[in-house]
Image (cartoon, rainbow, N blue to C red; front, side):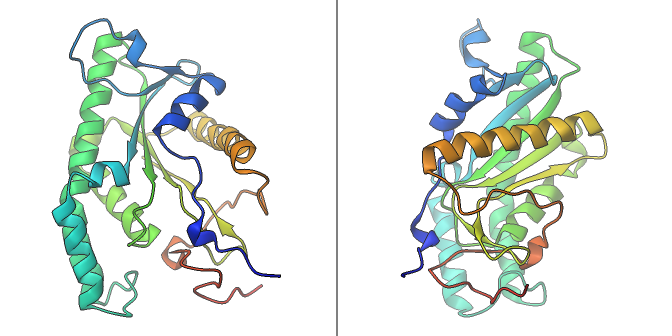
Length: 246
């Protein structure tokens, strides 16, 4: 039996499917609620949880930064065989420098859209959630992207952001499981209450059920309380990057 090559498989975490999913998860698309023309609004409203969410798809956003993508490719050519997760290596430091500005632009825009939506719909006490989907930007490990997003959001300019959901549309290898997985990895600010954590966990369960109906049955469907993200890596072929140790 030939092992499936999960590096060739793509799931359904993209804007059209998120737009289809949100009404099924007790949410609303915000665009029809905005009456004025020209308003840069956020994407989704969850009234029961008092949450406004903005979806950003990294591959789509980074497509406007082709120069940056070319520089990232050149860095991997410059340091062949070097682990991008190794903080001792210049590759990681140089990747952080290249990715910080475009990621900051994405987060700035999301923050602005959510604040505008709060004002437009008169929802000042709603929590802000950024959904960051990595749809094909496979060149860097999850811990680097998540760490950089967390570092940017820890700045004083983003005090209204209560949580970030980092989601991959490609498969990732983790040390906690022998199976290739699709990441749904929330990060929370100190201001996020237990109710927001439960809402996002429930949203993730609903998303998993939604995606599995479209993708077909998954090999495994389980939640991990904690993942050693610094050891996670993007699946690159039918064989694991690192052997699984039970």
